[in-house]
Amino acid sequence: MESITKIIPKTRHYDIVPLGDVQYGNINTDINKFKVMINYIKNTPDCYTILMGDMCEGIVTGDKRLDILSVAPQLRDRIDNIAMAEYQDMRDMLMPIKDKILCSLRGNHGETMRKYHGVDFDGWLCQELGITNAGYMALMRIKIENVHAPPITLFLQHGFSSSRKKGAKVNAIEDLAAGWDADIYLLGHSHELNVSSNVYIRMNNRGHLTEKKRYFGHTGSYLNSYIEGTFNYAEVKAYPPLKTGSIKFMFDVISEEKIDIHARE
Image (cartoon, rainbow, N blue to C red; front, side, top):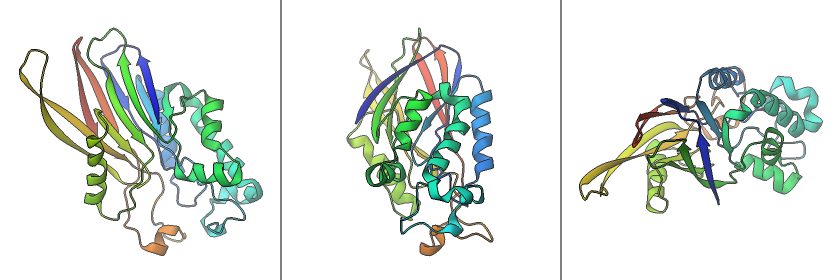
């Protein structure tokens, strides 16, 4: 587990748009939609992102999971070195926003490549783009320069839920608050695109009751479950179709002592 502190320049409003589970290399990845989001992050002032893992598909020749019908057409002529081809394309797509990436998590696809094939594209991305490597799980504090409000703390993990039911995924992420203290909890992996929240009561420094809100976000995916005329592993197990894209968090500096947090799916 990693602990990370990021200090960002002071302004009035910030956007945080996590990106993950792109699985570039799969025929069903909506690469155009992903590029639109990259351009949004690039062109929006004070907008940052967190890479949630599984940016590339990472299924190579010799792997029983490889199905040429599921490989993106633009990569089929590079099938003999597909892992490197996926990595290089992803690196080039992320290069324009490298200074807006707060950190990068490892995902299960990348870990399989690292452990069994010696290809560490999660680590390479961090090294080549100069990104903080958050490992598989991290707590990250975001501190705004010259603002005395407490830093915003995020719990980050690639994710682990394999449930088909949305409610079970929400329960799994909200249960994390029993073991880790954060303002925002983020998980990928499930491809779910969802934000929930809860409120708890505490006493402030003046001895009065105050409400504190926590947010829980499943950060979505850019892999379509079903596209007419293509074949994808979702069909084999009849996974429920899920909306693609990213969630967004907005931080508003209300005063030197207060930062408001909002979320949008």
